[in-house]
Image (cartoon, rainbow, N blue to C red; front, side, top):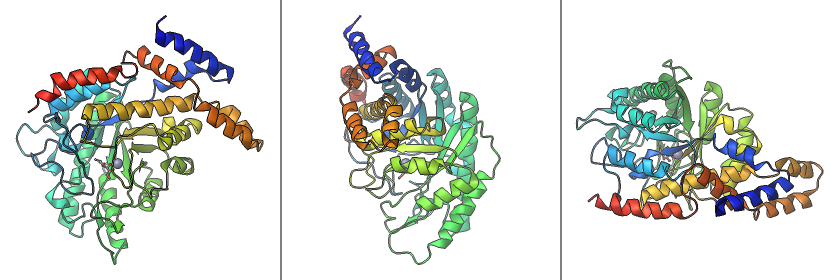
Length: 420
Ligand code: RNT
Ligand code: ZN
């Protein structure tokens, strides 16, 4: 028995004493895929042209060296991250990550063939699946601050065609991967200063979305989701796709609802929304992010907010109805490390939530024994969780503890630092 196994055996006994089945939790966590977002790998640049990210209310900062410059480099980086993350996961692509082999393809003409390289790679890597996103920003037709809700029909139609192309690409991905492709529809549409007509753009957005989703594609291959936002850079006063707008849309159209943890008022937390929405919305897509003072998309860490989200998913049995995606982009640290830290934190939060004596705490709460409830919650924080987590990493053949950082540094020296 090595150190990790010894610590694990003791930890398992401690958990058993409070009625928690560690082996069952390990089995459960291994079945939860996390969707790694391609855009952390290159600061939302993509491969459409050399221009990179422009406008649209999202902003990546930092110029840490070694950024992936080509699809091959991005795949190589993602593979490195996957090799340091326990479990089987997914990869989430944006439309601008197409492979056009040097020939500019308008966004309303992109095809599954432009993502063949990604599909082949995902299959070879035995990923759990691929997810996808229309890219309605960094484009001349998004420059007015409107896309699907643009007052001009020709521009709306362009974005509608783009959305339909994306759903067909998603269909090809879903079919190839034998797992539905979750397509997230996020549009930056909004206004910087006080609007006088809040309704018309929303009406247009609704109609445009209906046109995109009206194209019949089997749910076996594609699951469509819609993502709200409170404000963005340049859309401080009004965002067409507000929470109410998309909550209503998802409920009336039967789509998934995306909840991005950076897209609400700072004291409003996604954790508290899940139970309510679960009564009315069929499935969720999470964009797990970390806003610092605003929707800043910092790398996800294992903080209280993340813990609470994981607890809600586990306790309310929502994992089967929730697709967990990540959405952050930090260019000030090694980007492969960013993926690794964020994803490992997400898995830690879920595993930790699975090790709570929830039945016991529910009983306490129901009996108004709030003293025991608080005491248990506090004691759980110092249970030997690390021993279970380390064992999980070891059992999945990925680095235990800080060992991944050593591997990362080696990769940085041997691969990323040579990208000049
Ligand atoms: C922006 C949204 C959106 C994007 C990605 C790149 O505020 O969160 O999900 O971050 O599509
Ligand atoms: Zn998001």
